[in-house]
Image 1 (tube, helix red, strand yellow):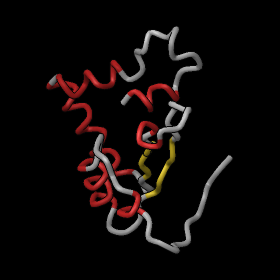
Image 2 (image 1 turned 30 degrees about the horizontal axis):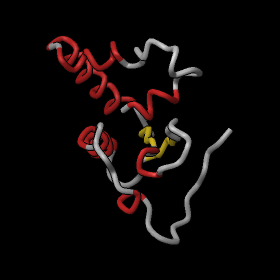
Image 3 (image 1 turned 180 degrees about the vertical axis):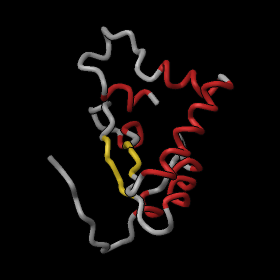
Image 4 (image 1 turned 135 degrees about the horizontal axis):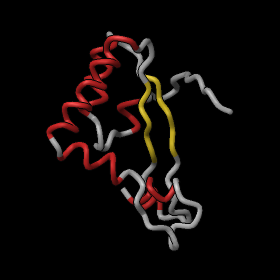
Length: 112
């Protein structure tokens, strides 16, 4: 999505807009898919905490800003392989905020 790519450039108009072009080509190649599956296997074996990167859809907000806000959300509940499968199922898909957070729910924020 263009909104997310804008976040990685200082000046969008003069840039070549090549962010993530090499990473997206991995999904088209058999060797690339094999490498990605290997990475997911390593995550299942070694990782203790699984987090996903999410971004806002600025076009829906109809504000002047076009750069998306990025948020890192830690997945809780279930085992590590279940968390990874959930993240993989929802990769590049819309996830409603109501599915992630409940009303009046307490959340922890890790920020710099």
